[in-house]
Length: 137
Image (cartoon, rainbow, N blue to C red; front, side, top):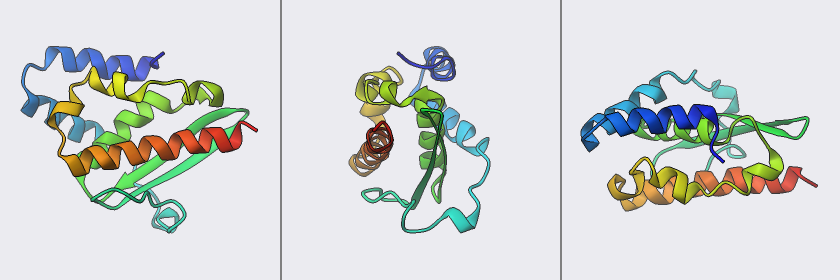
């Protein structure tokens, strides 16, 4: 069910033996994200439940979800990039069928994120799923 972009991340993770290398890779892919315009960093786009400041700006065009995001924490910005790879470009009905826990589990993220980061990641996934449900009317 994962996108080609997410499969590429998963394949890279298979070659990275230790968590420190994986952690660095998540940060690197976060650095590659374009910064979010400050005008979009408003309460409506802020994700509650994250220890860091997180903003997700979804777009739904012709039944397909894409989104931009940003955070004040580099690792979280990397997690946003991972979620973009997992969800961006999917038809709305497929967004709700992605088993995010299983897919992210393939990366070993569940075992190495703090409880607060895990809660924040869950909050981001829930925001994306609710956007898909709201727009798949």
